[in-house]
Image (cartoon, rainbow, N blue to C red):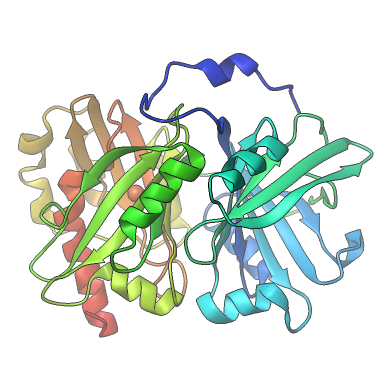
Length: 380
Ligand code: FE2
């Protein structure tokens, strides 16, 4: 792997409020604990266009777990399943169903990242450890965040193998084409009642993040459901973590439904960026991915709200892609239905055309769509 470009750490700050004691180069990977990693890997390849990258299991000396690593451009997912009864992974799946265990962050120095965060109050998950093979070495460390979710710090500048020690190349004959997904735009956490500020303070104090924007229940409420949200970001703006908590409404908040079925706080959605949302979403739909739809009336006045856009409205309308604008430009976005049986995690597809916000103007239309789904599940 190419040596790190140190100048990248001194890029103009996207979020000048944030502190620099924890320079983050990007998201290294996201690890999900799942009941059946082999079949989940097939889903992420066939439906989402991820490419097979690396494997760890009995054949590589891993006795208790199996992991498949998938990649699409800069996005790397690890799908991990337990091989035997008992243990931490089974417990996680029993409690939460399939879900995100780790949001791993690419750093220059995993030992320093661990020291800087734990001395500011982070709870240790993994003390720094260096693993080696013939391709070099990787240093890992980890801290806890909301719920049972963790952040792993990955230092890989001295490694040029396929992924990291313990993994071998995974090269099956089945490699469906990608769908144009580029990188992780943001990862959203749902936390319990009155916990949003606590976790935003955690990201500020422990990781040096600063708040980008906040939405309260006046922004994000419909007749029934409500939530509050704040977006925390690191200094270079590459890592953005919105944190949601439920708010009082006439009926059950979608965040409360998540917390109930996930059995606690956890990752609600990953937002994956594309350069061509029309092509990406059309491919995903062809491959069976189900998206939330908004009423056709959304498109009647959307251009009055957002102004001129480069795209034709027709394909956006056909696919149900939403549009929003802020001071700096506009964005296009769409959300899947939950991708699991439990109504917990979903995926957002986003294309930014200058806008740095999160689609606040779409919240109402979107939440009404979510409520229709909640109603059909009897959980509204
Ligand atoms: Fe999002």
